[in-house]
Length: 588
Image 1 (cartoon, rainbow, N blue to C red):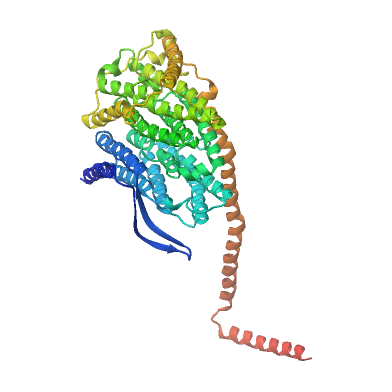
Image 2: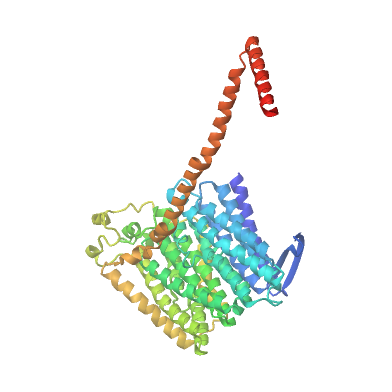
């Protein structure tokens, strides 16, 4: 009963967010203040809210995706429904707070609540060790980055003498103060959006429920970083050093994450690395420092929310029906086309989602990706080195994206012609395991509660590309299409030969996690043991010695309390004599 009530509240709140975005569309930008308090003697903190075009866009994205996730979860989640739905609703509300806030401290509140909710939702299946580990890793890495974010809020607020976002930049500030403040904010953005070097938490967050993954990757949490830079875009443009750092981080991240996705052997992990890469493409558009770049980044954020949310919901159906989203398991069902025949809606919608992600012409991802490429080309033509770096990086990433999309699609849904060569393609321990025939009789399509959100997001993956007027730069469109084909052909060729070569460096994801283990985790554990040892053997020794001395003193005093009057009189006489002798000695 409680779970049902929370489901009604969750769906209702998400629909309310969608309604708010519809009502605010086309309305003149407004600023609203609702109460406040004085901080010290110089700063006034108030609950300030802002509605403009960016607010409407983000509310629409958050509302639609969260509504789809809430409805999908009704058919997906069976354990701890009330707490799960309440956390998803709070997660959505926190993102809404970030979107509508016009005060850095109010934005920080929503920012931190999202981090807490993500920790609890990733660890929803707390009985699983990998879920607990993934939740803790996400919490620690994002909290570490948020320390920089907090100091960035202080630096900019004090530098501008206001914490109101709409007033930042309206007063003079020292250039180095602006650079330091924006760099500190960028640290928080890098952690929240899983960019290099704080990227490893997002792929390890996959043990959480698939609808939670869809919400995190499509509309909340990781998208908050892109939104923040878009909101404070004018400040970042003034801080050229920060934009350069952002461009370098984005270009390194998109190539790093795309290469990891090319070697991943689990559907959700491929999609997770894809999210990291696609977010970097958005950041690269923002790093161009132009209005066209900002517009392209937000356009890609919009389309990405549709097809990436769709892909995670499709992965949830596979996981729900098969019990695993690993290639080594799913490919067993491809020999007789079981997944395509038994899950036709999932197959079609996932095909469209992967095509949009790969940038197939006519779909949403094609238009938004090309808008970033076009903005980078325009900036590069003006002689910008950053523009050239972004242009080359995005083009190479587009080719790599097509490779891992086609690879995933073929290995999951289609039988390779090279049956013998395919044995052991995804496992080293038991090659003959591929010859096992799985029981496909229990495979069936998900309920309509799961399929309806998938169909809705599929329409978005197809039609949202035309929301910007379907502007096409034909030379750029031709180049990106050729790049996509060049990325898809090797994936197809390897699949036909039943081969899936995965370099050790990529399969181990460049060894970043082991490096962090050696450089961060091991020293921290050693310092923790040293601290505990010092507390027990040094500080604790003094405390224990003090207590022991008191016990011994009390025991000694207790021995004097014999209850014998003669003993007391003898002691008194001895004491008087001793005092008399002492007085005589002192007097002489």
